[in-house]
Amino acid sequence: MTDILHRYKAVDYPTPARERSWFLYGVGLESLGQDGRPVEHAVPTPGPDELLVRCDANGLCFSDIKIILQGGDHVRIKRDIAADPVIMGHESVVTVVRVGERLAGQFAVGQRFVVQADVYVNGVTRAYGYALPGALTQYEVMTQEILNGDDGCYLIPVAEQTAYAEAALTEPWACVVHSYVLRYRQHVKGGGVCLMVGGAGAERLVLGDTFAEHRPATIVAANLSAELLAAVQTTGAAVTEVRCDGQCGGVEALAEAHTGGQGFDDIIICGTIGDDCLEKLAAKLARGGVLNIVCDQAPARPLSIDVGRIHYEDWYYCGNPGPEISASYGSHRVPTELKPGGSVWFLGAGGPMGQMHVQRACEMKDGPALIVATDINPDRLRELRERFLPVADANGRTLAVMNPNDFTPEAFEMELCELSSGCGFDDVVALVPVPALVEQAALRCGYGGLLNIFAGVARGTRVAMKLEDIYLRNVRWVGSSGSTIADMRETLRLAETGELLTANAVAAIGGLNAVLDGLELVQAQAIPGKIVIYQQIEDLPLTRLSDLAAALPTVAAQLRDGKYWTKDAEEELLRLKLRLPEAAAVP
Figure 1 (tube, rainbow, N blue to C red):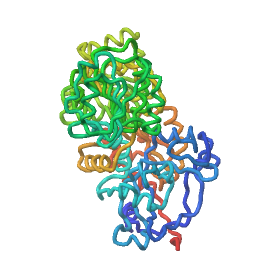
Figure 2: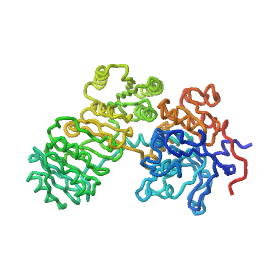
Figure 3: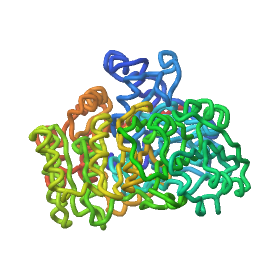
């Protein structure tokens, strides 16, 4: 008899007529499914330019919880989900089971793919697992939105030898990888709209080659010194001279008049202006905008900065003390990789994504020499120590794992200061969306340091920040959301070559019926790692890897070092638990 796993991989069985899916009909976990279970319905039929795929494995994500808490108001959904429910699940691997006639020759039954979730069609987000149905189902149709979107095909081929969990976790791992390859614009935007604002001391500043290679279409010159204004007028850009009061009361009007309210591509602050004005201007960038502050004086107080928009809208702040305005550009390491041989502090390191960051820092070639990981959950900290202290030791790294609650605030600050030799960290990664912790993280950046606002703090989240660190201490604040197809491909390559053990993040597994239990644990932040759902297994309760020996001893025997998920463990699980349909195929 043919091995059931071989038949499964080869799709050597009839496609069932019925399947089950987790539909979300409203806000809250009680709106997921019906009576706490997935909903049974007909397997869809693909059109001539579509694929029918089988959903093999999916990682649960805290982003799913954000959908559950916001329902149809989620920025990536925006519809009545009571009438048109959502199927979540964006950390997925799928197998083709049926190919539309117009796609013959492009795709074949049995091909496996991971899905890049950030789908765009005509410039509009159609994210997989949000606007488009995701993978918390057993079978689904891949439409032209995914097969032929703005970036081409959002399906990325998976090698035959790659395990399902390894592939599914490419998506969250790619988000981690993406945060370290950010390349911000190192010049003014050619053809864009640039606002230049002059203040005290601007007369000592010079343009340098600010507009030598990249020239905006429009420069709005507010309160510039006579010397700077004369230099700007020689650039060939359309220059509009305006005057603002000392508190920049006209900022809103300026942005509306010159950008239609979309924000400036570049804002260049020349000299010292009022704190309120600087605060307002820092919020008037377009998506992907750059704020360049050229000044040698600190504001009188920390400024209220929208860190959510740094995270989601790719804002970049740079600067220098002067006198050359152009010196700000290219004055920091790009891309945003951890400094080789440097020091890094991960705040909130015990969660699933935090553990990925720590694992990467411990394993990466030319990684940091000192890794500090903090969390307030003792169980998560114990998991961090057990998983990564041996890895750090093997790679010659120092890993310090600490709970801030074990110290007084003053003692904790002293401990951080001592670990970083009193100079601050080269990299600080904020992994929890708590404004007070982002503020604390920013204060621990050393000279030339990098703050990575990785946690998805909401747009409009304002934090009191020392903006002078940008232009007087060469600090940079960066953030990112999601990943690109290139990131997914690179992460999958790392996984398939063994350079990155993506499945090390697995903390628990479950079948389709276990989704609700799994999401409850994710929402409670009660599990130190990723939960992977195998959608084609229905009767597997949510099972932590630490409990596998009692529940599934032959599967537990295939774990690496008794605690890490492996391809052999996955294949043993599938042989034990898969039930392939024998009914007639869908006509």
